[in-house]
Image 1 (spheres, rainbow, N blue to C red):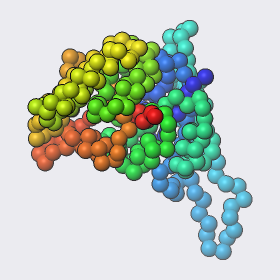
Image 2 (image 1 turned 60 degrees about the vertical axis):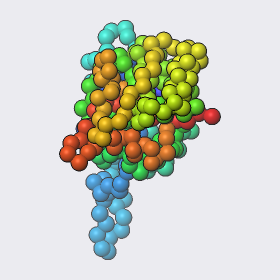
Image 3 (image 1 turned 90 degrees about the vertical axis):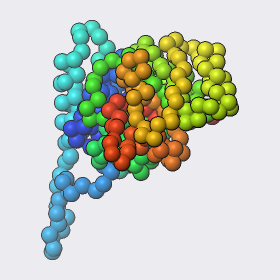
Image 4 (image 1 turned 180 degrees about the horizontal axis):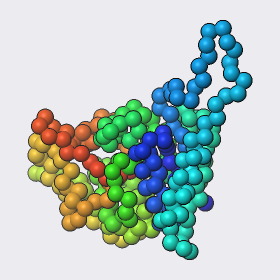
Length: 284
């Protein structure tokens, strides 16, 4: 059975991301597998070796993954109705080094998605443009979902895909629709148009809109062109018609990712993005 790989550093926000992963796993009918990811060396579980002493004979056993999975399972039981699907929780007990963790994940053909909190950052936009997040996205061939600490745990009613009008975006939109098919959510494909008067852009928007209806086999999809000419950028376009529960983008060069996720930051005010963000891999 397919599974969601959840990266954790045992912080409160990564615990929230794991609960979010379990919530969507119930709807997707997939399991959850936990991976301890340690971005920086930790002294907490290291045993000091005093001068003149040998190494301790009995190493400290890190039981945090076991305790973390047990706590999640206990919480899940309270949230599942009798007779409904309950994801199985397992964990990878190997190295917490990023190379080892990501190698294990990409070699597991059952992995359908990676879920993580914005590790070592209090702001989702900052994490999305960090080296750690870039490495996770670059390494994997499955979607990566980043869940902010205070994102509500609720069923997804509306998703938004921010398109750059790239020819490959239609494949990413189709993958998003198939992956989240069980939610029966509406999908707004939005283009942030910095030059609404450009005829070439209008033509590209028209072509993508046509493909949404001719090339996709999923309902509830519509296109929206969003004039993006204000000097102070924000995320208000995500609220069109009704609130967006999940924002998705296709993998882009780091410069483009930085420009997009820093759009809410200005000299006088910062508009934070507070919903989960999914980055979809580029498909050939």
